[in-house]
Image 1 (spheres, rainbow, N blue to C red):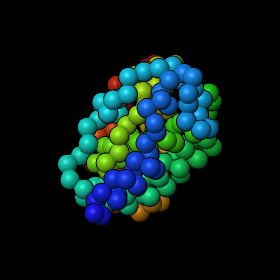
Image 2 (spheres, rainbow, N blue to C red; image 1 turned 60 degrees about the horizontal axis):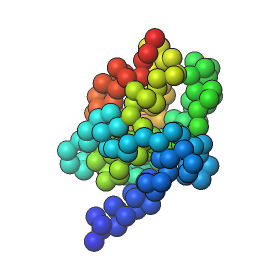
Image 3 (cartoon, rainbow, N blue to C red; image 1 turned 90 degrees about the vertical axis):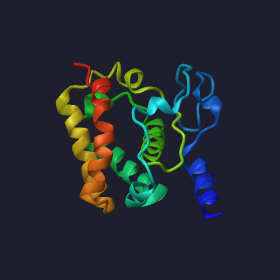
Length: 167
C-alpha cells in the first residue's frame, strides 16, 4: 500500500501527460517543443538497483529541493549564463526532477528529450559542464546527501558528458 502511494505521488509530482510532448500542447508554464519520441532511454542512464540511493536523496521531496536549488544557482552563475540564456526553466526543472527520480529508481518515468538533442544548440564546453556539476554537488550537500551517495549519482550522470559537451 505504501509503495503504491509513493508511486502515485511520483507520477503526480513528476510526470506529465503524453500530449505534453507535442509542439501545440505544452504543460502549463512550459514553452512548446517539437514532437519527439518519449522514452526512459532519453534520460541518458539506467536506474540504479534498489531503493537505498533514492532514500539517501530523501525521496521525491529531496530530489525536488535539489533540482530547485540547482536551477536557482544556475540562473545566478555567470559561468553558465550563455548556455542557459534561452532555456525554459519551468521545463528544465520538471525534466531534471524526472531524470534524477528515474535514475535513482524512484518510480518516475522520464518524458524529456534525449540528451544529444537537448544540448545540441547550447555549445557547452567542458568548463561549463564542470561548473554545472559543481553546482549540483553543492545542492546535494545542502540537502544533506552523503558524499558517497552523491558520487553514485554523478557516476550515472558522467557518461552524459559525451552528449552535452559539443565544443
